[in-house]
Amino acid sequence: MISVIFGDPRGSLSCGLTNKNGTLLWSKRRSDRQGRSFLFFVRRRWFMVIHDLYPEKSKVMLLIHPMLASSESMRTFLVENILKETNEYRFIIPDLSGHGEAMNEVYVSAAEEARILTQYLLEHGITKIDLGFAASLGGVVLFEVLNRGEIRFRRLFFEGVSFYENSRLRGFLMTKIMLMKQKKGLKDPKLAVRKMSKMFGDQAGVVMAERFLKMDPLSIKSIVRDCSNVRLPEMNAEMQKSCVFSYGENDSDLRLARRKIPKRYPEAKLVIAEGYGHCERMVKDAAEYAKRMMGVD
Image 1 (cartoon, one colour):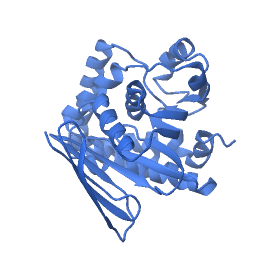
Image 2: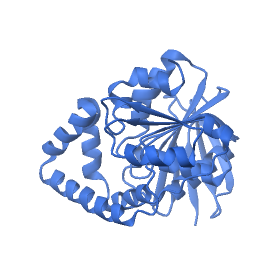
Image 3: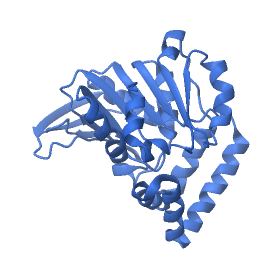
Image 4: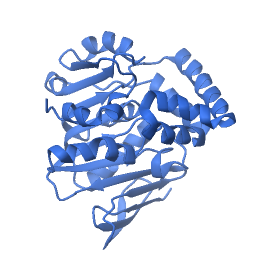
């Protein structure tokens, strides 16, 4: 199977062709006036877009969005606030399959997203990342990147990530609930917008509701499956000390995380944001959240 790659790292456009094993066979770059950065992977129906910003910087930050968000969300709520504090980072920001600029494609699995993302990093000479950030579904994908063991991380920050392992019943029930909510939302889109806006604010709520209603049901099923069957990576004590798990106090994933983190990652730090739900603080208190993520208090 042939994979086609396109991308333009901050002012240039890269095109390439890979074979079925993902080996780069040919590439070319040209200037781009808009200075946008994106990379497309097309493999059967799997399609990821990777934005690579400021590639001239020596430090690298990986930002992986949650379900119903996108690389644009990461730019709006995180990158813009990070740039107020420092301009020393290169940002790698994927649009996972079924999201953002890859909205029309079907999400297959976290393992496949991690494979494609890792391939991009290695082909661009990135073997060490200074800060890896991932929220919710993005955290499950980052777990899979860690499981591959090909990329090293200096620091890790997870927001609202699932710790459910082999939870078939939860997966079955959540799939039914999510598909039912999508069906109701399609009948009454304004209701979907109101519910999302109540949780994440008007700016994010409208966009997230629209994405949810447009998402392929197969993507929803696969995402719920992955978040109910997480493969937790091994971390040595040194890596654990550089790892933060963050949750809103009203996040439904917090209860299980409280039990599992001390057992699986006893040296890691658990941070709980009072008054917030699942992935809410990064949207509603973006400036302060970005500081905390970078360790700036």
